[in-house]
Length: 123
Image 1 (cartoon, rainbow, N blue to C red):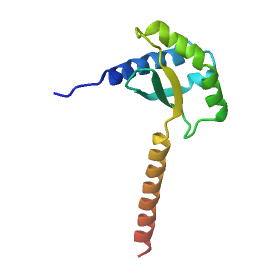
Image 2 (image 1 turned 90 degrees about the horizontal axis):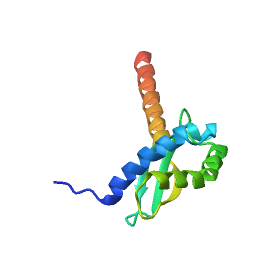
Image 3 (image 1 turned 30 degrees about the horizontal axis):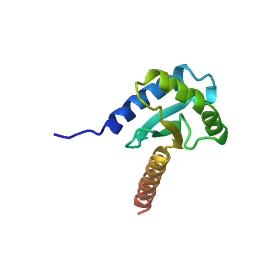
């Protein structure tokens, strides 16, 4: 049977609460367009790396990232109210680039298929 680390369980809880806070409590429309894709907690539960994407965008705009950083204190306070932890983790926001990378790979594969079809029709 697999054992789950406490940090993994807390990360899942932080992800759910953070998504709700961004959707319902933060009033900045740039921040409300963000989707939390993952949370990585340190083993001591004092630091949380928050991975996010901006809906409909491959990369997050600098203005959106700045707005998120400014709202960080408010978000941390809200998490503190909702989580029953000794320490509220410090939040480090990171853009999740895996979606942009995946869409780039998908685009390249489609181009290869198109090129193969064009080469096949020339013969």
